[in-house]
Length: 172
Ligand code: GNR
Ligand code: NI
Image (cartoon, rainbow, N blue to C red; front, side, top):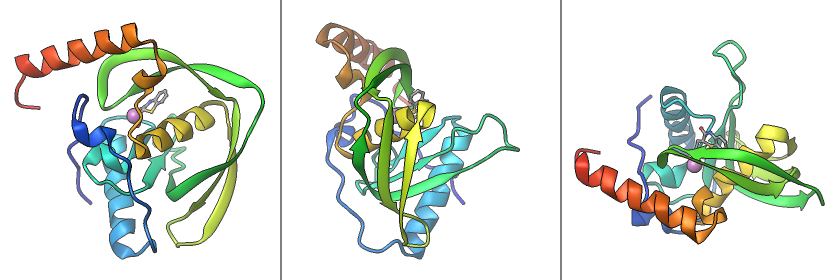
């Protein structure tokens, strides 16, 4: 297991579209485990491979509140196959947009098809926080950050602050 460095905006690697995986093999399972370890250490409730500089369609999620009720979900090539008509607004943050938050509107319930750690096709229906996080992680695979769902004014204010913070702390 290994901790992976997390990229922060405005890193151009966060704006790229990640390519699908073929088979979930031992190397990709190791990547999923490293991503989970990195996510728990951060701490965060989701992580997408592009955030650790790997442009492949892999995400991990765990919305459990404590170490005892850990319930990690690892997905390769996730696809949304159904969304509910009704929306939900949730305050989002992102490990790649440190110290900034914003209200994002997304479908309340989504059905997601993906390859699991055993390379088996699975489907889950996610609602509530899980639906928010899965959609947030899947956005990362297409180079989209939660700030892209905010107004240009809010987004540019956050990006300016991140650029300034990076200049003041060049070792990040
Ligand atoms: O840890 C995280 N919390 C969070 C809270 C609300 C909506 C989305 C998230 S995902 C975020 C971790 C992260 O940046 N994943 O890409
Ligand atoms: Ni994020």
